[in-house]
Image 1 (cartoon, each protein chain N blue to C red):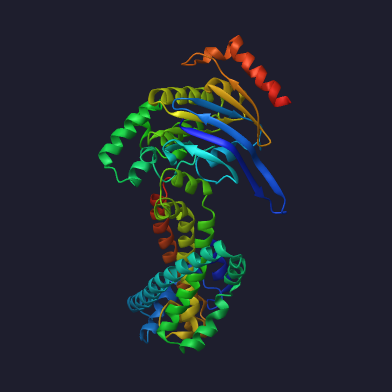
Image 2 (cartoon, each protein chain N blue to C red; image 1 turned 180 degrees about the horizontal axis):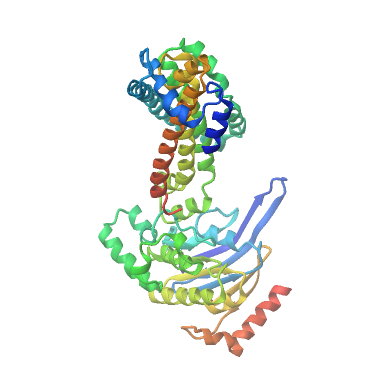
Length: 246
Length: 244
């Protein structure tokens, strides 16, 4: 068991003094190599949950257990890309290596390989600045930053947000490929039901901070775009839509 | 320029409204009087202008360096104060509302017209502008950058020099550009009544002589050198922030 959340609760105090419950009694487990999608409307607590798992916040109740007893290596794809605009693509991808003072030669080799895995031509992209990239390309590079340190758990916050459908599908395919290749566990929070089903082995429906349903997704991997038109895929979507509208 | 030439010649009052050719052929050589000459002389005028300009530039360099250092400290202190209490709003309001040019008589009084008073005035005025610019730059850093750095394993110190410093760069470039322009005005104010040399002192003397021609020459010197500094800094900052 890589990660175990037991009755996690999180509340914060608004400026008016009112206590707002962001999360209430959220529990789930995660094993290595598993994809977990967490879906819910805006304000349901998805990003808060991700920040709790990443150690950015501390839960006000409940506990988070990690295997080995301490916070593992995490990769986090933030909703806003948070690429460092003053660093080239190469230097963004090697940021974590620079912090650990890994040699420039080794970092460059890793950056080149990572760039290829992200579907970007190293020669064309490594020396570009983020402002020279399209939204989809920036998302790929941000994903590269998240996976550069070979995390045990990859956290994705709305991976397809603000992207057109083609770029979104490309990112979803990329996440799947990279995670399967490196055996990351993945937690993806999204408000996109299709994205949740396409990526997840399991989907947790979150609403107003509470878990409303858990749906096991039994679809073959690797998942290709053609799957989106299958009856089974759409059945899962309908099931989740039913939960969302309750 | 052509319109000024025509209007000036028609009016025929060179002390009040000098025309461009008059400025170049009469007013400029007459600056030789500031170099001790009894007759207008272009060479002595240019030498005299050059030496006073060098004094002013030296004062600006010294004052700006002192002011930037002090401004950095004040700006950092304001930011740290903001993290502990809400006093930064009052402090910033005080800093921003200081009438910098109105403080010139105070500096004359404090330093009795000595050289150090000029440096202190330029430094003080620069510090105020840099402090507010620095504070604005630091609070405008998107929090996502710091979160990203933290998630990738950066310690607070590494977050500071790998994220905070470069993220502040564009706003700081703008603050420096402002300072490079304002410092000429600060030096003019400081030298105007409390110095025996420098361009500001020449402006004061030209005012006493009620000679618009000389004032126009000196204004042109300020404009030319101000523009040169601006162009050089624009190139430097464009290179430093080519990613922005």
